[in-house]
Length: 130
Image (tube, rainbow, N blue to C red; front, side, top):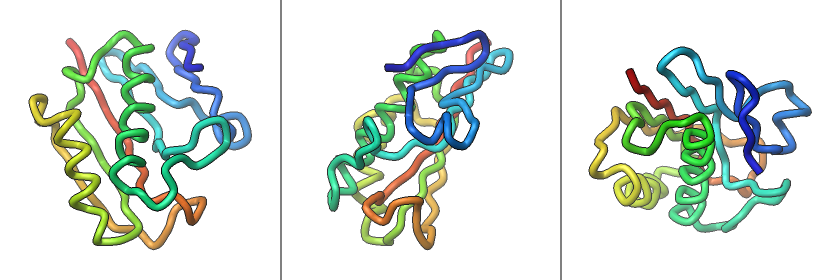
């Protein structure tokens, strides 16, 4: 359950409390969403499926953006990280389904790994509204 507390949005994710960060921060017209993975209630979802993990990742980020009062149409930048080159197309397909009509700036990066080896993708999302 995501909730907004002043300029911070919290999803209740296990790492937010443990590592001392917010799911998103509202800074003036910006909503900056921390890295999201396909982890719900401490469990990695859609193990082995980069496409479905990406949909979950972007959904978690969009939920935080909406709790902060903006929408997917306000998304201006997406950065996603994959652990295998073979996942770019699957994550890109999920990105296009959710943001294809918005066309935010986007960067995809291959990384050596994420905090849990079952995680295939992580993303940061930024939204802006004047």
